[in-house]
Amino acid sequence: MQIKNYIRDIQDFPKEGILFKDITPLLNEPNAREKCLEILLNSLNGQRIDKVIGAESRGFFFGMLLADRLNAGFVPVRKANKLPFKTISASYNLEYGTDSLEIHIDAIKKGDKVLIHDDVLATGGTAKALADLVTKLGGEIVQFNFLIELSFLNGRSKINNHPIFTAITY
Ligand code: AMP
Image 1 (cartoon, rainbow, N blue to C red):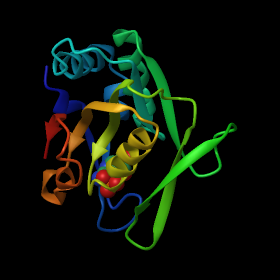
Image 2 (tube, helix red, strand yellow):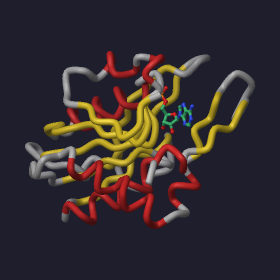
Image 3 (spheres, rainbow, N blue to C red):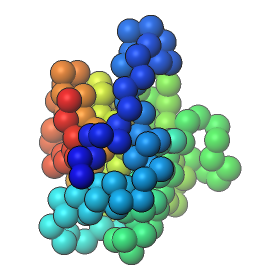
Image 4 (cartoon, rainbow, N blue to C red):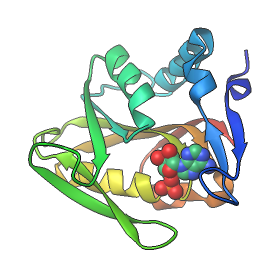
């Protein structure tokens, strides 16, 4: 079974010129989803993980599955003003201007071993902001993992001081 067959390309979404990688067919097929989860888990080689960080919103799906299988906590990182408790934030660049991501201040303890997960690594701005949040709270990043890497955008250059694993590369 090829996981790639469950990633659907949507031309010009959410705006012209973007080829959107739609993971909903993968979420909707239990065998492909399980295979993908196993690939992500195997890449950790049994390293201990205390917390899995998932980025809003498509990082929540496999982020939670990973946390469950690793017997780790799951921490949602969300867009500004969505989380109810005290937060810290990190900003990142968009095509025009900046946006920010937030995490609860008590979500990670100093020295926690952290896995950062998102669905797609594109320009790397989101991933860098996630790393900044984890580092500010004293977490130790064990690995970044992504379902999909758009390698032509070279996002990994922003986070290559940490191990990076991607299940599918385009
Ligand atoms: P970036 O910060 O540029 O690395 O973008 C990564 C974030 O944007 C991830 O949270 C993705 O969900 C989303 N994203 C960026 N490009 C795409 C794409 N071509 N298809 C699907 N999601 C994307």
